[in-house]
Image (cartoon, rainbow, N blue to C red; front, side, top):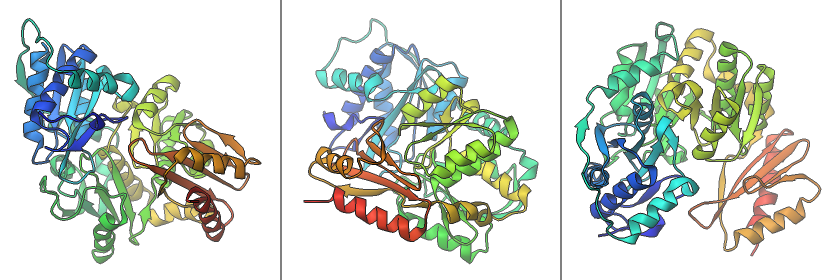
Length: 450
């Protein structure tokens, strides 16, 4: 049996298949998952990784042995599992996935009723403790297993309700699924909209043979950026491995940052529903805050991470939320993140506005000069943050999530990684690109001292 403590992360379970978690370990996790959540009815799906069917079957065996009745969803994108849990009134659900990680990884994302996520301090740590403790006494009676073969159609039906499908027409769009889970739900979607699709790597393949399914990395975006220009497309859309995030390329081959996309979506949604709260993470460009206010909404800045964002949305009844990392959340989709709904919305926006995506983003790029997230390996994250706190003592400081410092015309956030000896910097200047670069280099030098 292989199950190491370090696979139990802040937001999910994730580790190297075989070296850090194997089938027997996954069976223990499935059993502990039911013990911690008390789930009598549980839904379990899995992604396309070669290890996922075996890990999923083992997880289900563990859940059955703990007395839960399990519905096996089979191959399912993460957001499909969120939808299934809420729609079906399940007590809990899990998707076996390692998200955007390379093919050697496996893991699980887990939710309770209503698709509310588990996190390190709301269940994952306790699941880890029980799973690592040894073999518990099985339930008096094991649960039963059934299947759900109609999930994909119902899921696509729900997502299409967020747009007018007949309005999504006249576009040429490059679609890069990276051989991940978007390739499962895109074919039925394409049957319902009238676009000239340039499908790339839609065939699900757990080896991810063309490039890693992580479009946040520039090397993984190079293909689609080139393909958009070569095909004269109106835009490009790329998905990560489990397809709960999507990323956009404008018609010139330019990457649209997640916070700028959040600003565009917030403006679009508020224009439809009227004054509402929109949540965004504290790394974001001030473009998000300003766009929400200009559209008549109420901005609500909160800490990074899907578990925190989803809870905050419920607390303030937010209609929408977005994160720099490409997660976009919708109140009417169980407050959950989706990689399909934003893709449909952006296509609708471009098709109906008559404006190219680059033009929609141009005013933001001209006014808000952002660094993007920059990682630094540090021996002592606390000492580095102390240096920043002292150097920028004249700024407005907050420590909701790492250290945030704001001045009138620039600001930054530095956060320690939950899993690695890294500090993550996001910085923005309202002055100029050159000013952003100077400030960025100054802050990085302080972080990397010694």
